[in-house]
Image (cartoon, rainbow, N blue to C red):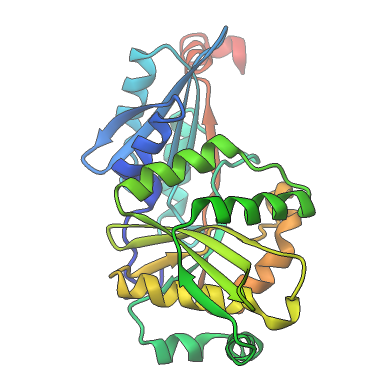
Length: 303
């Protein structure tokens, strides 16, 4: 991140995210005092391991130890390392020498926007694009009201209707487990925008140890002229700032390196309008531990 940007650990590397994944059948492995790997057994193959948003120094020895102890078939590592890292060449060499190879199907967004919530509300508004700032104020003039409801059933209805309209398939068990896990620990909330007493947009936010995520958002097809989603995200920023969060991750924008994000171009324009800093991660890396051990033992056979 830019100099001075307060960038707390990613929520995916928290004890709450570990509890969430355990609710989905994953096992959490503590790599270091502040990082986790998550594994799950796949019939006929063995265990797969994923390590999202892990920071430097990369715990490669610990990852290999978990792989050896748990009959791991496959590892996916997605470091919280940006493409502008000063010693990126050395990091990439280290990954390669550890048997990790880049792939093009990441589990976490490889490109996102982060908003510095330590700035004043006046600065945050000033950093928005002119049209976005206008849309926020227009929603207020239209009488749109944003409330903290924590009404998961109302949110689900909006979210599933949005999914049907935009032709994507929500993982219902994942969303329900995510909400129940974080809400129980007072680390999640739902804000909903109303127009003429009708719920027209809603968002599920996560926040933990000064980090926050714009996790899921939904809106109805009608009343687009009242600009409710703009006011909703602005009120989300204000809410999280008051909670003491120092950064808001808008959770993914279009990345030309990843074909599956081509459909993200629409909401990418929406998110960019709120200012913030674009973050481009180095991507996803995979390793097949059993195959790698064979390559090391029989080098002439595989090269």
